[in-house]
Image (cartoon, rainbow, N blue to C red; front, side, top):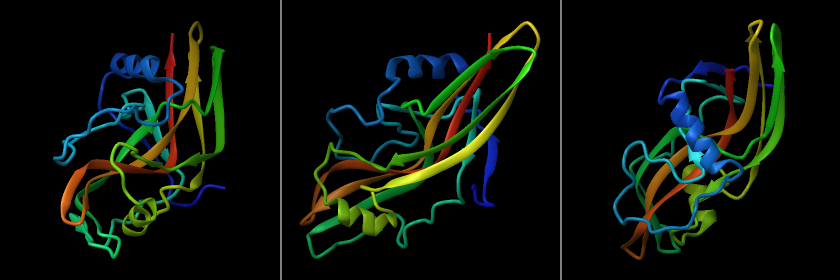
Length: 202
């Protein structure tokens, strides 16, 4: 069952066509593609490959409350291992492009979708860092899976055909990884916290 902290919000951050293009390009991919990472902190609004910002047609539902902030936002460390995290920023909401579930139907009808899945946390592999250290500093296990459970209802008018597609919702943090005082590069970690429902008619 969902906790009492559920939220049902429509996020208006990019156009439907833009989101559709991202989904078509990255559908079925949940991890970041390999590539070079700048040593500077990630820019504001950064989204890794394989993820997208909620679109105008996206209903965002959180399975639980807000993820607690790290104890020392901005800079965390150093640890006995020599690792430290700096320029810590987050959490920001992003959706994955791994499709959890889909349904469709001709109107007039009400499409109902209930999602209950286990989704893995994500840690960028572009910068080498001890996952246990990141987990301890951000407050969640970056190598664990988390349950996400929610339901949406979508009214489809007569003469239209409606669609619902469900994707995982994550809280994302970005940070710089330091090892023995040297900046190893910018990285990110994500915790599954709910479901992104893309809903539209044709």
